[in-house]
Figure 1 (spheres, rainbow, N blue to C red):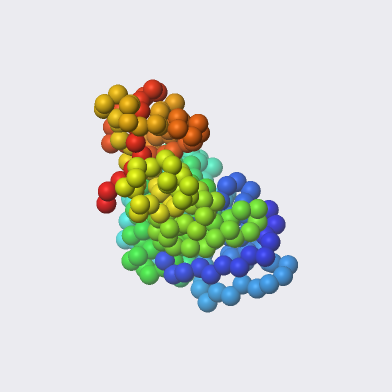
Figure 2: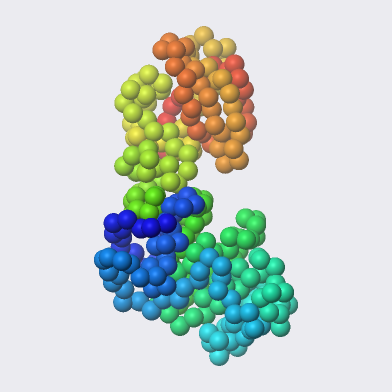
Length: 292
């Protein structure tokens, strides 16, 4: 993917480069790491960086221990890193004998021991199942904080950005679509298109607020996340509410609701995060903003 008119400033700390496959994430990281040179413009960086490419860049003839020993002579630090990334039993193995997950963990462990002020990682730990990945990210956070380093990582997963990054650079078609703090993009996105980078959102225009929500819902901001939407089941049997549930799809962290507004004969999709499953087709409901 060719980059087009890219302008971005990377803050100290942890920054995610977010976008779908082909958005330009790898191209941007390659330029930041000086693996590729831009045909125009310039890169200004006072930082010494260590780059972890998408294929890991492991050295075929070196053992796991030798990969880490190349970065530091501190045997205690090496032992701690082997333990944190569950590679203690593989110290004498070379990359070809490791699983993809083990290779992925080794590339990260090696980077964290590097003598640098910033680490650039292209989809780190991509081959690790999500149930185990959180503890390895904890090791990354702890190391970055302890050594005062910065991290730039690419991903296509909004949940990973929300859990690990303070700042996010959103990529689309080789361009930087937005560069913003993660909380601002999640809670105060400037448009629905921006908000969608971090997952499902109910984009509430004034017309939608006035017709679909209860009359006392006057403080609704345009960017309404699933956990902010209150869906109240009409226990009286549906005589008071014109909104009917057409379909309910459980998506893990939220439900996708297809609703029909009988008074205006309009069907819309809303996202909410229920405390427990209770809605089904045919229910009559009222939409409100969840109380803080």
